[in-house]
Length: 104
Picture 1 (tube, rainbow, N blue to C red):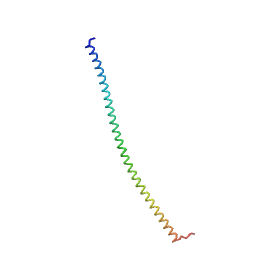
Picture 2: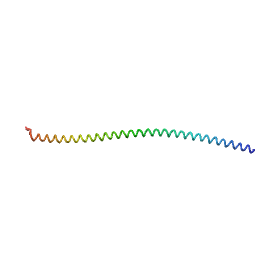
Picture 3: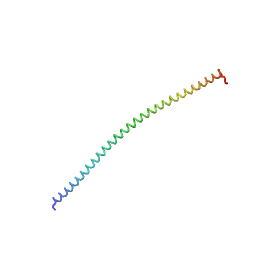
């Protein structure tokens, strides 16, 4: 085999290796693109979930604030009922003293 033929053989083998490496590179680039697309999809989903969570937390805070206001109103009304009950008890007791009812 002549030097030229050996060199041509070596060039052909190198060309095959380069071609195989280019195919591997194309596969790696395609896989990388797929992973980037998946990452973008998951990032979008994460952003949407975070937005929904933020909205629910805001709603929860509103409900808790309304609940606190209702609790305060309820406590105030209970206090007023207690005050009125005491006043009624006092007035009823006074009526019993001032106007005794005859018992058979």
